[in-house]
Length: 277
Image (cartoon, rainbow, N blue to C red; front, side, top):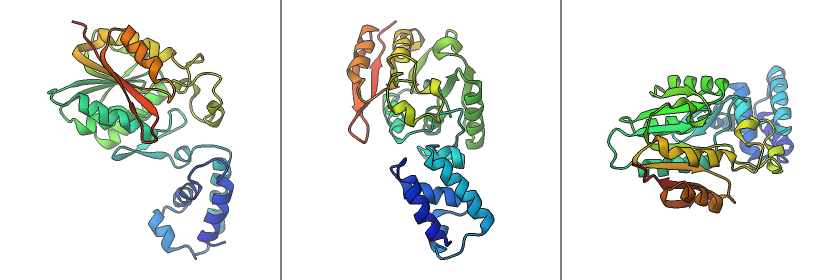
């Protein structure tokens, strides 16, 4: 089969599990051949050698079974760089970039800001913020040793200075205080049907095993003790959790609480300012 025929066949098989089956097929074929998408387009009429065809078939079968492309190729684009990802971490999503954009706004005018990313996973948020604010002191925590290893490797490869700390939410911070606490915690309810679709990703990073608000309760309740004067808490949450998260923030004493929508128009992130002195 030619490269073009292989792509058409793979696209049809992947369509049931992907919103972008053609792109997925191109990325998988590029992984097999070591070629960019542009190079593949230029060679669509070339034959795919048997060994590479067998490898491509195996990757397509795994993708058709629901395994994320990022795990199959080992990388995922986020912000302005590519991150290494493994099944130990969530696949970074485009909507999470909203937290980077908003976090940078909240830090505008703050010299040498102190930032912590709770539950950093691949390091996406911490590394994006560190990339944009070279003057910042950036910490990142995670309870998963395996996730921290992925995040550290990404920081080393990108040449970004981030201090990674092992612990659950605030447990690794001691008495440290920050100008910005940012987090993309597990927020999917245990009985949400979407969990079946996400079965290849680490369950503990997706759900708290309850109503999906457990981690958000813990973070909002404990954040003020680790925020500087007028520091900000900024979290990602589910599209239908905006009102609940705003209530949690207000109950914890935060002011200027507001929610922003992602590119799909869904409520996706909430921020609040600490008034604790």
